[in-house]
Length: 188
Image (cartoon, rainbow, N blue to C red):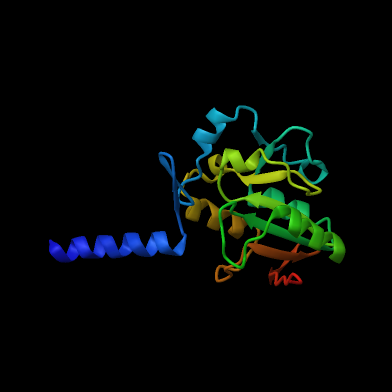
């Protein structure tokens, strides 16, 4: 019994110290999508995207997050010579995480289309204004029939034809073909 308690404490410490999940209010960010809570707190924010128009959507005047699946996004990026799909976690602090506005500036300089896809739904972050050319997208958890971030994010990436071993938030596509994780270095 004493050993199992120590193991539980060690695992809890490991998870909290690595920043894998963040407790906010009554929910855990990064473990579950928070779709229901965000949809209730911010009516009209989360919008199911029509699969025929996601590439044509422009940044809206009022906050909207268009829910998409990986197939829809794959069809969209196929229209561009160079595109990055950024799996965005608003609370991530790793070197793979960037402000959508900063990343858009970089992509504009490199002539790369940017698609920012929220990994989970944090309404307070999703209603902010970001200087990006396209609207925010979110992974359609209902399409993937799970509310667990790790599961639906993996299915989304599989639909994008991302190699299973790739661990990157920046997914680079050339004419719709997945080329690998993008390496971006900003001048300090």
